[in-house]
Length: 124
Ligand code: FES
Picture 1 (cartoon, rainbow, N blue to C red):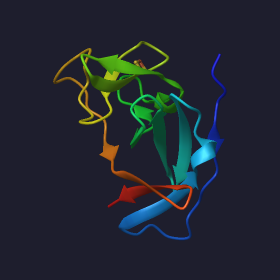
Picture 2 (picture 1 turned 135 degrees about the vertical axis):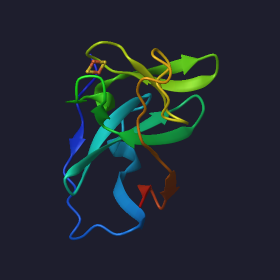
Picture 3 (picture 1 turned 45 degrees about the vertical axis):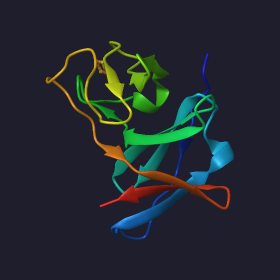
């Protein structure tokens, strides 16, 4: 069973640009962590095999559950994805498209960069 990781991060004010979200070691290998950004929640994922990072909204659009950071990660024909733990709707971590119900749901994705051991998320 995967450990639930929720990091409390409440910036003084939201502004566009890179948001210093957490330390690299705060995100489980091949799993996700939830970052609070003001009133929003952002799910951050790290794929060790690819050495790639992804970030999406944490809210699953199917039944409005804050759940995607606890989802099952994997890939669909090379497309990195996360499946919501509730009803297994899966989403591309690159495009945000719903892979199990194309055209029905979509999630927001964010750019990610790593600097000095910290995960930075690009926000609008
Ligand atoms: S709430 Fe996520 S798949 Fe239903």
